[in-house]
Image 1 (cartoon, rainbow, N blue to C red):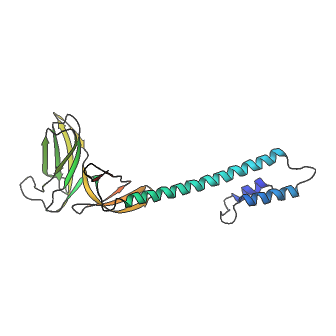
Image 2 (image 1 turned 45 degrees about the vertical axis):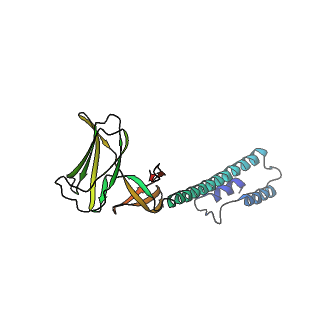
Image 3 (image 1 turned 90 degrees about the horizontal axis):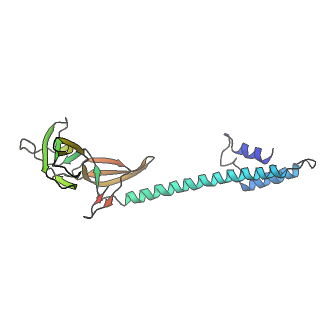
Length: 226
């Protein structure tokens, strides 16, 4: 068996990295043994010798590259966990189609209003998807717009504590466009996963939320936003 055959055997399906893979010392021992056992009348040619060295270099390079990638992946995961840990207990904003109402505090919603909008309409929906309240803002300025729902229903009564759906839109004449709603929450836990870092958050009114690869940054008011 020449060195190339030994390398192939070591890299076969039945090989286990712990006791059958070939390292540099194994390669050199096999190469010396091959020189000692070669036919003096037909010695190993330069081309074959160089080919064996080249193939071993490729195999060794691939192994080192694989090890480097594994180390990089572990470091990246560690950095993500550290970054997520720094968010624990901090307020963040998250995209959501629901708000929580505890019966006392007004949940806050943030929208991005496009230029030219004549008004902004926000519908509050019950568990059956029926509108139970609406907030309207005429002539809103373009950009970030924040509003709060005081918990009052359309009939003037007060909403019971719980989760409510929200839908927002910008209206200009006969046209309207749906707007993304962001609500505030507090990060309560982190969990690395194959898809990325997951943050577990609880909104100020008790609702749970899990966001994959949640990203936050501090705004001018000192609060963290995605």
